[in-house]
Amino acid sequence: MNDSVEQLMQGNTWAQFCDALKSAGQQILRPEAPATPLDRAEGYRYLSRLVRVALEMHVEFDDPDFPGFIVPSHETIKIGADNPDNLYMSARLDGRHEYRVSGRRGTVATLNFATKKGGYANRDGRMDGTGFLAAKDMAFEADGSFELILSQQPKPGNWLPMAADSNQLLVRQTFLDRRTERPAQMRIERIGGKAKPRPLDPASLHDKLMRAGAFVGNTARLFADWAQTYQAAINTLPPADQAICQAAGGDPNIFYYHGYWQLADDEALLIEVARIPDCDFWNLQVDNYWMESLDYRYHRIHLNKHDAVLDAQGRVVIVVAEHDPRLPNWLETAGHRTGTLCFRWVGAREHVHPTTRVVKLADLRS
Image 1 (tube, rainbow, N blue to C red):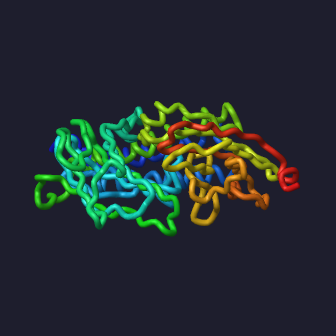
Image 2 (image 1 turned 45 degrees about the horizontal axis):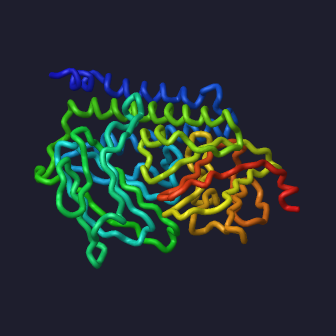
């Protein structure tokens, strides 16, 4: 009996997993984090959400011989300023093998595929890219169907590079208007694999649960560290460190801005972009302290290239406030007094930096 099985049989596996989750709770109690009942409650709910995706990612769908897509961020699981305009999909890979993704393109505004190595289950939290392919550089049949090969060696047709240590495929689908656009439908399979998986290997469950526990703690710590750095310049939205964003799994076509906001009930944050450069997409979203997008199912907390209202000079002015200022481009704070922000240019030829200022709502309305 090897050590992993011994740990499992003695109950140590489960105890260590639970200990990792308990330790992750310390991230919510960091001294710089807001300590209101709402922020504290959202912090612990955030950890529960990370547990859900950790088990999906590292236990249920962790077999690279039989990969399947999961959705790692959505309406009730949110990680690292998740984009409300995105449909994220991920699948486990082993860079030593080859894979086929097949499906139909749909009508979503942008679609891209990226292979990654590392991941948040590792202490350093790095998820570096090993290959990238955008749909605009792919070939599709007349009905939108496609096939994409993932491998280390180049292949004819649609090909996405991997490295020997690639371990994840990340797919981003970005909507301009979710109400009218259809997402791509796809499946993934290993080429040359076995017909069906064997029953659960007891030795593997120990390692899977250890990775799941580490994912929760490391993810919570990584983005709590990010939020802490943003507090140095409240109510601003400066360019982020792009290298750090890319190391955490960012899209190489995106230029990111991150900031920290803090507003009284009678205040508004104005975010102004002097002009909109040629780009595939842009948006701004309001997040809580834990870098979760606020609940976009029921609140207007993000604005993008499709629905923003520009003034006569081609400028966009976004108003972030708790109460409706009766002006275009209002984003709600949804009961929060502090949080983080994310602005992104996607495929922009230049990056026009947003400017910010805080005003009284009464003055704004007048």
